[in-house]
Length: 168
Image (cartoon, rainbow, N blue to C red):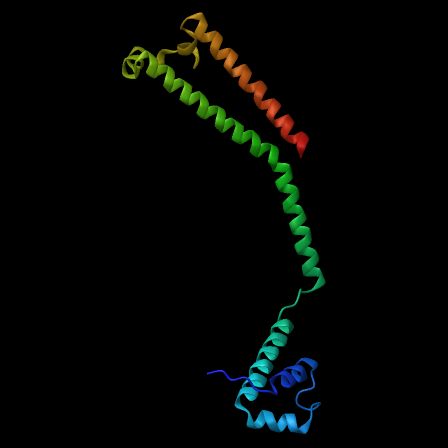
């Protein structure tokens, strides 16, 4: 049960002003000895203040050399992130384009009917003279689409990298 004492405000004011116990009246000190509520209040307040001052003393910014070194490290990390940003954007763009090409390829194969085992059995990869001979041996449209797609991908990649490096 908490009871309020009539001297509680005076004790709090004395503690806030820093006059406890030497700078206060003798009757206030006598009252705090007799009143359990005021004695607890003084004990708790002094304990919290002591803990606060000890924790402030323990926390220090460190030596000036350490602070300077951390600031330099943070500046270098920020510069490295800014320099690597265009590369990261270009990589993300390449992943998106690769995923898009994969989805389009699967959709095109699905629309024709999935005949991959038949297609693979008709190809003889070890007798091909170049890696693109099987792809380019089809109709002219397939070759034209492949060449245009690779060219468009190269142009778009260059544009993305240029625009990303312009903003940085």
